[in-house]
Image (cartoon, rainbow, N blue to C red; front, side):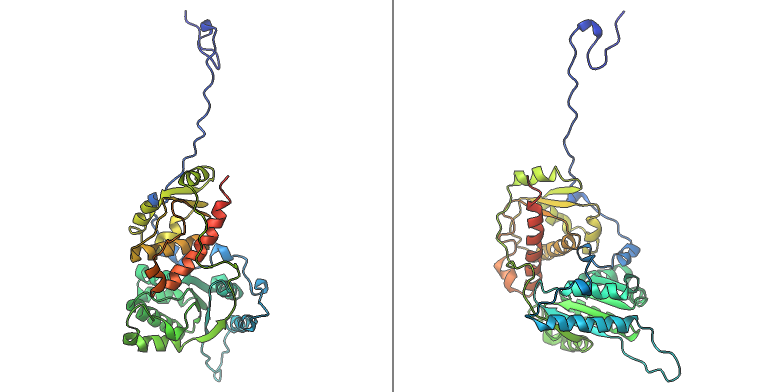
Length: 362
């Protein structure tokens, strides 16, 4: 009769116990290129809130630099705007109809424009505000249709547009019409950009052909200049040393919720996913790791990468960069072209996220 195997060993008759195998401690790291989110129109609307990076942003937490008086002036004006938007309109036969405010903050990188825009949204109330980037609003129109987008946004008291940048003539006309419809319905508008409204479109297409649209759009905004230096006190273009690909892989395996991809795989994947879904693509992602990072030479791929970097920055997701890292990520021609401000913003944000990523390497 054969004895039953003893716990932790072989059959008792053998007299030599078999060592218990070590458990498999290999961390399975998913690939960002494998995520294909299905985003409903309702999700797109629900996502029109300030980014997580600015959850605690308020007028009271903005530190105006006394060397640049325009910063304090802008805060004071935005507080007045918030009060005007929140205050219920007068009713009655002799009540005077007032135009909803529309303000436009212009300034360089890192002077706190997004902080102030987020503060305005919080002051008015997130349930009464819509907050998104320029491209998120154009994507919303693409998903819902123009009329439905106007109806949805007209239920809010305030529409905030961060990084107001025009990519093509169609977007110029689309956004001009959208804002005109919202303003006519009494919705207050607030926007940020690194370009003055009357200069929108310069260097990107034949602006003179669309001058009427651009001027009509600019005329709706009160321009608030926000002067100052980049609060991060770092160069816009960074040349920090990249990580070794093996170090990137090892670090990704230690971070729960991290993704790990070859850079070229991500670029190819972004071409297959609509930019309106990039936010949802990052659901549950706590860190992003790229191996084989190299310069991006195709403009369409570079612009999609810019959108991804913006969404990563919104969520404070650390980034680990292997290969060539940030160095030469965008070509000199791109950095001199019409989209240069987008690329410089992406490099500034990516540099900050890469520093967070380096802290994960042990």
